[in-house]
Amino acid sequence: MLEELRAKNSRVIIGLMSGTSGDGVDAGVVRISGHWKDSEIRLIHHYHYKYPEEIKRLIHKLFDFDNTSIHFLSHMNFLLGEVFAEVALETIKTSKLSEKEIDIISSHGQTVFHSPYPEDIGGFKVRSTLQIGEGAVIAERTGITTICDFRVRDMAAGGQGAPLVPFADWILFSSQKGNRCILNIGGIANVTILPEGGDIDDIIAFDTGPGNMVIDEIIRIISSGLTDYDKDGAIAGKGRVNKQLLETALSNPYFNMPYPKTTGREIFGRTFSADLYNKGKKMGLEDEDIVATVTYLTAFSISQAIYPFNIDELVIGGGGAYNLSLIRMIRELLPDVEIKTHEDFGIPNQAKEALSFAILANEVVFNSPNNVPGATGASKRVVLGKIVPGG
Picture 1 (cartoon, rainbow, N blue to C red):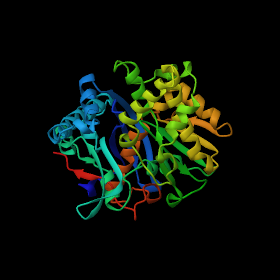
Picture 2: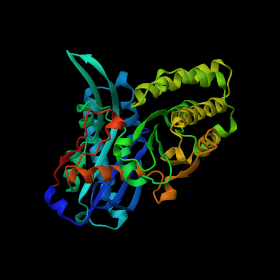
Picture 3: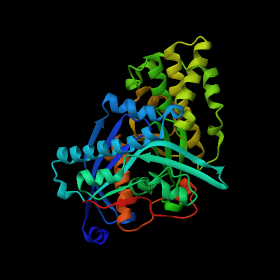
Picture 4: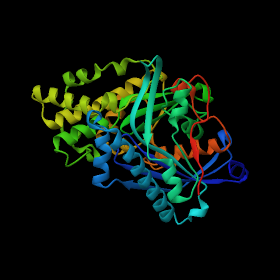
């Protein structure tokens, strides 16, 4: 199977990405010829699937760690496999391609747990990560070979299993004219530092902290669950940043940790957000001021993280690219940096991660390592992704 795919002039791959925000699936249909730095990549089609309210509710129930059962987790793994399969089939339909023209489905899955720092358990030092959305279900429903579960091999090699997108950033955005930073603002914000003319071993990448995650959770609290994001950053735009509340948020130890580092809901999820909101209310702050402050928290933590690298150009993508207040704050904090979006490079802001996992899957076909040890802390380069043959 892999030999046949390698022999083809190009491969058509569907990348599927459901991010830490848990609000939907982005799918990218990508044609790739060659591999590694010889890759020629074309995004054919982008499709966004917004989760129905019931599916979204079930996913967010998984994030309530104290009340999630193994029974529920197991069922959700298969349920999301069904959802991802339907998204893949709908993506094929809207792209006007046929199922026979798709070589691979590459599914990141839905992250429900990420613990990248070793803990002593049963006499072993253990770190773990869990992405669900059963690949066997996707392959069975679509009949298309599916590559999934990318993060675990990097962890087995001593890495943090994240960030994985830097490999694709290196292929897509490497520059011979200045230092470039690729910023993705999803639930968590992560950066890839690409030094001018640098090779893969020169890449630095890490999670800076919360992206949309804390903002979204505060909006859920304010709206009693009726709304789950600040559209265009309009609410933040009406408020004032409170220095005391900002300093409280920035006291979290994560912000002072050295890279490589990754984070998630375990640190910046519901508990962190609710605690911050309650502290803001005790200070007498209006809701708009709290939203403005947590939006500035994202902007400030990003700017502080990348400032030491003498960046010439910042390329922003992810859902946070549409938050006008957040982007304005980043511009103000980095006045000497040229700021662009992924769309300036012909990539929809919400499509880059789906595109990235298509690129990672293409490397699997060639049995070619596709992690970046400088980003994850892994002891060596390894091939990420498990293969489920199509039927």
